[in-house]
Length: 376
Ligand SMILES: [Zn+2]
Image: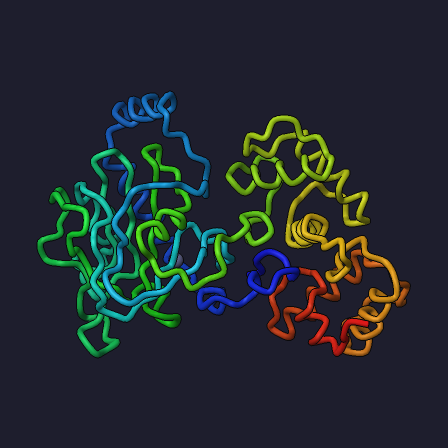
């Protein structure tokens, strides 16, 4: 999925994770885990827990970047980039994928107690020995470890296990303790061995552990933090809440639209601001922030005033040449009128997708080059 602007060379190198946009997670299985967890908590207790956390200092937003002291979960050679908010078949990605060879040791990131081992009741999947586990830390946070190994060494037979024998529900673990092995179970099978790592705050909200993983010594080979809005796959609309909404609200405020309080909650004022923005740019004014509107916001935000990067709203001969070449390449943008509007934006996006460029709807050096244009 696209990440940020074309205006800086450093920002748009493809990361390994970006090359596997459909590294889908076993969502259904995770939901089953969540359900099991909820089902195991008596109703009264869960009400008490909810009430307690409602007033506590820990009140994260979905996907909020957090500083959280942890031990890096993969012990050995690995690489990762910020994949939170990346596109997945079920919507967007709620964790970080740390790519590493199969059977690389996985360690507990904090002191705590094993809460869940595995999710499966399928005998073929080695119940209780494969392929995911949850540790509740002593401070109430949780770390989730998914796609653990399910093969015997050197095979792809699904008959091995990726969780150490001693790691069973209720067992105490120490930070840095070896608990499991990297694998490619679930729907990582056809992608690459990786640890899908999640961090949940005490209220159960999934936060973005990217910063924490980098601080813990993870070898970041990616492009730096993903912009939750521009680089995020989630469609935002009235009723959506999360850190990406907060980023949207800040962006709209910066662009001169008054969304009122920046609270991460997409209400009527945010919607009205989005509609105004869309009208101004000639986009469909539906108040829904999908790919096109995000790209347009990114374009406006990151427009390089030196004129090196063209985006929605740009005008002139440069734009005319882009339009002419898009038309020539078969990405019809209508008449080459020198005005970068929604049709040109769609054309640029389609062109970038087709050429496997960073899809951001901006015409920077790479897109320009691919279009056969050099700076005049
Ligand atoms: Zn993942």
